[in-house]
Length: 604
Image 1 (cartoon, rainbow, N blue to C red):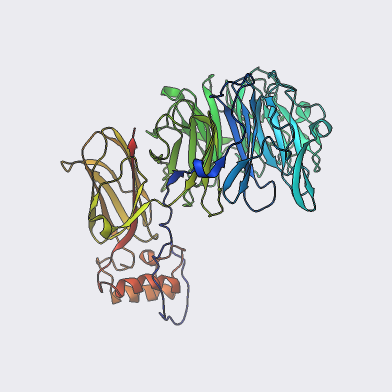
Image 2: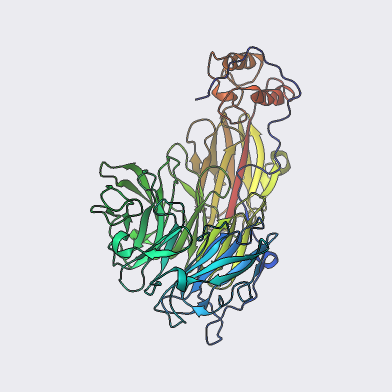
């Protein structure tokens, strides 16, 4: 509902167009810039010198030298017992230079089996430190946790020093596969929780005293869980303001709630009676969980990636629908709806890649390229389209364990840093192949396995675009977005014979339309139909003085103009007159719905 703003007078003076963009809004395109942006200095080898091709990496990021850009750390291992070298990259103006083997972090390049690496301010001095989870099943030097404390000289970063022996009494000396480093007991410092694998043994839990000294509270605060834990994440799953632990186990997956009944030792305690919620049966193919609000209802959902990638164990989303009286979250499982992940999914990363307010997902794969799932949820219906550009992610490349998503070059757009089975890779978030409706001539000929096409257009009836050159069995995704929230559009895709392949009309002004399908051959026609148009307040199909008068009534508080919120800020105010000005200075009484149409096609 549009909020009403009451004024006594309105003037239209020097208003510029509301639709001038430096970059088309909410579009998404990724480009491989590894060759120019990543400088690896330590060869990826096994201890015997052989080339390492099956690295299992966990990627984290943070500004450890306080120079204003985000650096990268990678914990590196192979399966349960294979030794690898960890990696540290310093970000120098968007270029990542590896410093793993330098005096900046002595001993960091030793061979070990490291499952997690975290850049956090554990000591509370304003400088990021490094925590490494190691697996003691390794034949490496210690198999123990390492805490590298950030040291400075003259207010500048100098080096990291491993103080794990002094700061973590009873060093982690058991199997470890995954973990989280967060403020679990809500006292303002960073704690850590380590899940066990490959042996079925107790998870480990350490609390920080605020200065980077840790106490092992496993016996008193950790859940009694001796399962094979493959992945650990955390989030406030029941809306009580506390971080809960979410475990991907072999059997079963679980949520352990934080201080759920208030009868234990306080915040950060996961051992309360009745605090454990099963998420259903699991098998050894269970692989990873990522928590985020995927449907925009304010509750954290779970993306569950599956190593099997087929049948009952395929990737899925567990939608969090409400909190039960017992304090547990209630879930509804949404199965993979032709999302097209590569199969044998590894860990997922949730992030808003295109700044549209929806959480997208990057899913790594054991056997195929990563998958970028673009969130197109609308009207409460959770939906995704596969938005993996074939030119940036060729089939069969960049297999791996985990990816991190962050702004790597300070351009305000989220990029993707992949720790792959072999080497590391950076994918920048860049402009799509952008053009205006007039430039297309109604024809799109260079789409397949290229950058996504983004067309800036406007419609007062139906616009049609013929897309040619698609390969047989192409995976096609089409997304339609309005410039504002006051035009309602329908998206239709037809085959060469005019038959409808797919159609999206989810209702409501400004609702994004999206389609995803596998096309078996021939050209397609993409149609954009305007159902209602910004500024047409009286619904007669044009925008004229009558609509301006109706808007004037809304502006002064008597009426609602859903079709006049041109700048999408939820109110009718002076800024919306820019939209009217554009219409009246153009075609007089004609009105058009502005939109951005995006099309991606790649070989399936």
